[in-house]
Length: 369
Image 1 (tube, rainbow, N blue to C red):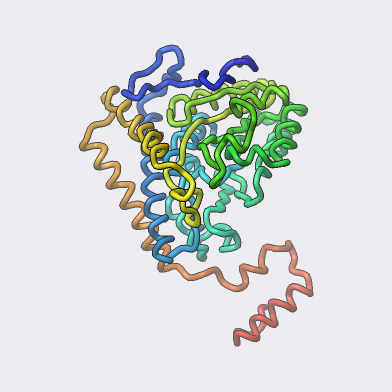
Image 2 (tube, rainbow, N blue to C red; image 1 turned 180 degrees about the horizontal axis):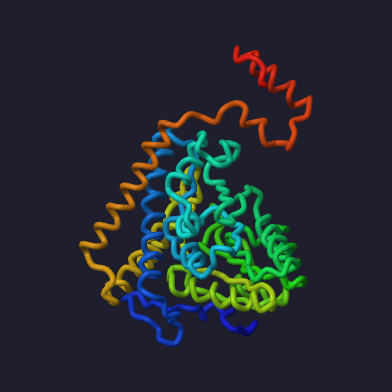
């Protein structure tokens, strides 16, 4: 991958046309099973987003952050990774979690912060962590995941593992100090990682023009001495190909790649945001015409892998999974008090034991054995 290819504003890696047609030169040639799995993960993500956003509006969960419109970014990237690869995600990658084997029940549990939540209610909603799928916890500080991903990748390199680490950052996150430190560290050390910037046009209410003076984000790769590529983030085959090629480069020992996925977000930045206050509706109407799920569905129909009946059956299956996950999670109690203390230290120190005992006595529960 040349460091000068795909950096210009009009130079965008694209495989799928709006009508579902395929560019033979860039087509990664995915088999039917992988294509159907990609589509299901995108559909599942959209349905889960809609349902959990409604739960937040009803006061049943406290916060949510949707990825609607950006499903092809996370799912395409996940499909290009191996199960042994690591991910340090941002906020809008639930599609990656689902593709890599996380269940809707686990995701919903984290949003409720109940006893099923693997983080035991310690993180705010949408700050997922799934150790079994090699996915590091999402953290709120902006840009820190780039440094974390470079560190994870360096550890694997030093151990001689043929694995990579993929991380995501938003267009606004490129203005953070940690983005620059992480990019430089990854490039200098030739860390086997793929750094993906999801350029969805807005950092909460701030447009791209207020984030960078460069024509594209991909151009930033030049300054750090790594390849950069601008990709159609609404095209699941293009995001797959870009990450697959970057992965192959990384495992050959050639270092990191910076990818700019040009996409859009259908909803606000989060459930606390009202995008109508700053984002023109005409912009949204134009962006919705590039819906990655609809685009991929048309492609599947062209290959004879999808039709109206199968599509409706898939949507019904995904709705049932999400609804069942919500119903079951709402019946689960909050984490027990002991969970606040039990895995902070390998052996609980006397000072912490004393605080626990005092709290349990105040609750009339007696001392913890």
